Picture 1 (cartoon, rainbow, N blue to C red):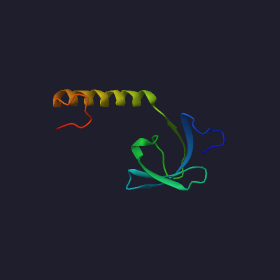
Picture 2: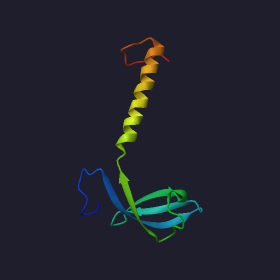
Picture 3: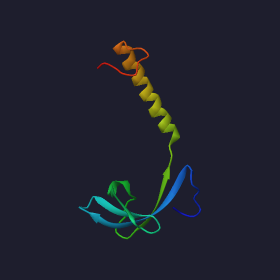
Length: 95
């Protein structure tokens, strides 16, 4: 993690390098300033024209609104299951 990033920040920037492209559709990417961590990503997730040796800056940001919406969706589904099952107030549902 870069020195200018504070622990607990809502987003972080990560240095990355495309090490290689495999099978013309997956990029092997080395992460961090020391390039020790490795991930694979579909080329479709990278900018057009990205290739072996290109350096990337990856920003990871918490999406609190998306999380809130997902939690609301799950709660609504739980409420619907509770209503259908006749187990109001119970955590275990009969399916």
